[in-house]
Length: 297
Image (cartoon, rainbow, N blue to C red; front, top):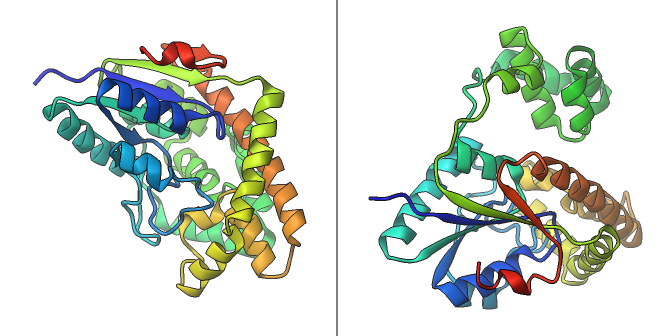
């Protein structure tokens, strides 16, 4: 069967991807495949800003709430499941819209995986112990010594990726940044058209601030309290922006107003990193609002 042409809608958080994707899918008889590393998890709903019940009722969404909170989930598994969803949608004669802000998921889906070395459990255990004993900054400093380029792109809080970069260096003798350039992504797995939504910075920041207020008003702190009670404190999304701060409220380390301010600030930083990533995507077309011109995309 001929490969489907994917319509990819990317962009920073709070840029309006979901609403645009639903409008396009309704107009063109399509379905949506998510590309969000947090929305794949069940029960983490408010803090991940999942599409609303009305949006999901209007248009079928795939790769949404498909993984148990403590279940391991990798980029390779995302690729496998996304491929299956795309094949199913295409076989039914529907159009495929891939929507999300996780740049690595989009790159892996469109271009394939880097053949990186496997995990080193012993090294990982030592580095995790170091993070507990001396803080994540200590692990990040080790990365900065051997791979300053990767360290500059990864905050100390992103312990999983910091450790992964150190694993690659330990096993290949090369900085992860160099290794990944030498083992570039393949030419292409699907034909695609990719648009990146690019609101003006001030408008985006205002949208982020407003959405942060909304998430807390909808009960993010209560959601985190319930998730902790169910034993999901070590789930991957609990380490993401919003959940970290709401957990601090539950544990009495922040007030809710402090958490809202910190969440908005960290989300703004994250949006900036997202745009830096997308600017490196071959074939991406950056589109400022209004997005009405994309309705016939």
